[in-house]
Structure formats: C-alpha cells, structure tokens
Length: 163
Ligand code: MG
Image: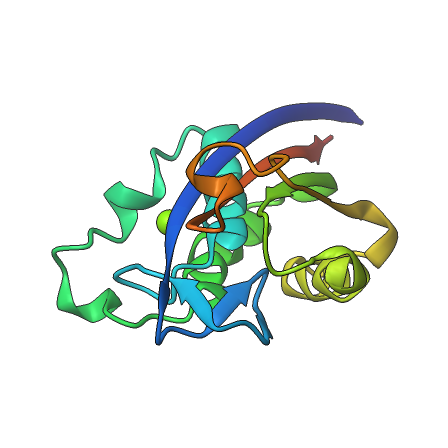
C-alpha cells in the first residue's frame, strides 16, 4: 500500500462591520459586528477550503466561487467547503489533520474553540481530535487589533492510499 501525502495552507481575512452576523467555522457567535463578504464571510472555512484546494492543486476559492457570480451571494460557506471537499473525498483523499489559527481581537473566541473544531470535523467527516482550532489576538495592534477584521490561517494534511 503506497501513501501519497499532501500538505495545504490557506489564509483569509474579512472586515467586521455592524449589521452582519458573526460566522466563524460554520458557527454563529453573538457579536455586534460580522464579516463583510459576498458569501457569509466565514474566514476560517474560506482558509480551510483554500488549504484543501492548495493541497490538491485545485486553484483557490476565488477561482471556484467568484464574487462576481450572484450564485454565491450570501452563500453558506459550509456549502462552499462541501462543494470542494466532496469530490476530493470521493477521489480517495482523507484528512489526517487540520491545524487552524484564528486572529481576532473580539469577540473572545476561547470558549468557542471546541465547538468550532467539532463542527469542522463533522463537515470533513473526521474525528474531532484531528482538528485543532487556536485563537489569538493582536494585542490591540493594527486594524485587527481594533476589532475591525478577523483573519484565519489553516494548514491541512491529506492522505491518499493506493495499492
Ligand atoms: Mg473569504
């Protein structure tokens, strides 16, 4: 049995504005501001989707779901992730692990990390222990530090075995 391993990384950032729900990792978290975006603006799922595309040489999320296309307006990013992951899974790729870092000054994400990780694991069909979600602030520095944006960075390792 031969194994092919592929690593992928993704990054995303969204501005936070009033009047939008705060969506992260497929979860709605109470906060007066939410990510501005053509879709629901889920920076973590966008970074994860890009990491999966990167690992498999599939381009990027902007190629797949252009923000000029009205089909993706207000799209649930869980569906965008699913549209990328389902064919990869069918092609035999498995996720070894996901390692994610979210950078946001507010809201305080610490209490939400386990739920976000479980949700991502469910979307990928893997045990929760294979997903790690970490949260950082920027020590009040810069625009993220002022609470005006949320960013996410994701590394994923994929494995495909063949006889
Ligand atoms: Mg995005």
